[in-house]
Length: 622
Ligand SMILES: [Zn+2]
Image (cartoon, rainbow, N blue to C red; front, side, top):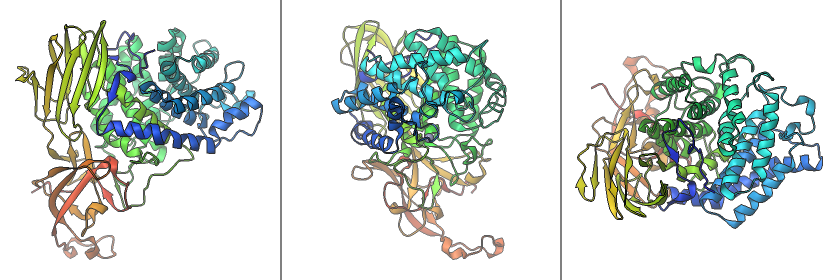
């Protein structure tokens, strides 16, 4: 069984096909330790929380007729998402202990299914209430997560136990909703993409039709017509990305999945409009989205507050999931750029370095009060970041009719099947800390095909060498460079991706970023934490636009990171006094020269609490 995440291998409108998770073995300093922590710590810690909070026990309660179901919204889905992470982890590398946990929880889950296929623990004993409150209750949302968990388990282990239950539930839902049956849409989109994946797994077209039905019905006010639920206008008429960020992005994932199967142009045109609106006007420099606490929602154009950034971890995960699907549809590197940005920054900040603590909300500036937590009452984020980490190996490569696509860089070995030829690619690199990448290509027999290497959009200068000789085609940042030849064992492609430290400015209408800059190096966004910067408050830091910024790999710090050091200035805000406002004539600032250190944003809040900031002052107008 080939365990892929989004199986576009037979999707007629997919330009790219997936490479199974188990085909890629990460050996790098960045992802391999994180996947180890996921296996050895995070999945087990989350399992404990799911047991302790009664979320798994709820399924057992249903099975034995115990009506004391403990309910918090979407509880079942927390189990499913964690289970999906567990299944993908097993597919990557089987582990007996984790395998036993998965088998046992799979039985518990399935034991709670009703004879008619219904599965939602809260309404297990209340048939009358089922499917009555689509706006608020998360029955369809949980069903979607169940399908995804079931598919992952089937692909990882070959067991049909969960998949058969998923089919029963999907058939039950399809018997209620659809053309000529009940109208309705999920209050929280998610089931759309899961139904398409179920179609890909079973070949049963009614699941694809149902996914399309839920997208077609949206915007008719069936769940109240609010912008929050993206129910205010039909999907194909949306011209800006709005509403609850996770709902919005999951809906886009589903719509992209439907496009991948149907090729419907109006769907894709809508997705493009939403993507450009998000990337050009409503996304943080970290790839995080959802500017507002109110409604966990997208804000207006250029509304990107820092201390009050919501940037839910789940929204970053959803952003990655959507961009992956857009990449499959187009083979365009602009989607990989956003995927990579959100992966290394917005999403990764959601989990502590030790794999035990989680952020739900990810601000870009803080006074030291915001800390990761063990768990949440609404616990969507911890299992979501777990399943993202479990799927990371699946995001590195794809194939197409023309050859192999290399999306991400990290030291690994991949065994890729291309038209009955097995191609081994050994990647040697210290990415994301260094921009040199060497690909050693070993086809099982000589074969003519292309290798498409991604030249990241963040890279201003790149060079590519084939067996030591520079390529004639000049690499263009933000595209894939096609290298076509008859590949022989031992052929080597070498990429030099220039990775200087750069200062990034915002569009002038992001008012809170006026005269401020952020530091980036390669795919990594930096922040300043107080613990690394003594003698001044990091909120008072001024980085001159011509500051000499130097990068140093620091193996003993934060699991091994490149820090950025430089010299700048700091004001002393304690001189200001207690007034909130002053006449400008009274304002006097004395500047002192300081040395500063910035660390990767994802690694913040792993040491003593203190002020943190991404966007520091920089006199842009000279
Ligand atoms: Zn969440």
